[in-house]
Image 1: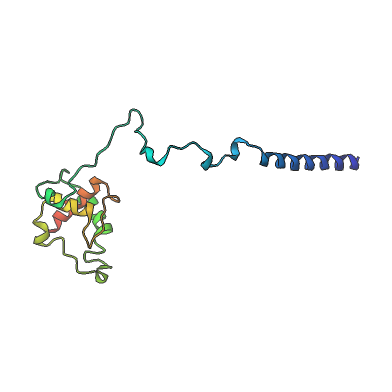
Image 2: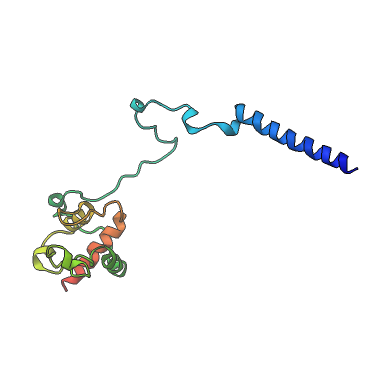
Length: 156
């Protein structure tokens, strides 16, 4: 009886080894790699948008000069959220803990900053300056306008 079990076990092991050896040489569906897939040529350009999709354009001035005459589209309020975002993104360099490591940044409550239009501040946050990083990809348009709203309250 033990011999029959040993023979059966040996046959199972040999069969498993054979199946593994055969499957590595065969073209099983799970053996495909990404480089084997059909791909469009690089010169084909981007894919067309999905059927029924709606294009989304980001609103707001992206040029500081053009933004001088643009007012904040947000209604009153949002200063609390703007304050929180300001403390995360702006305060570290504008009188915050890392300000001593950078050239002196202007106070955003100063009259020479406050004299500019809301769109100018928005465009500055979006594009940055030579000394300031651009936050256009980190903050959505509403968050940038909320920061502008808070910066306006700083002059009071």
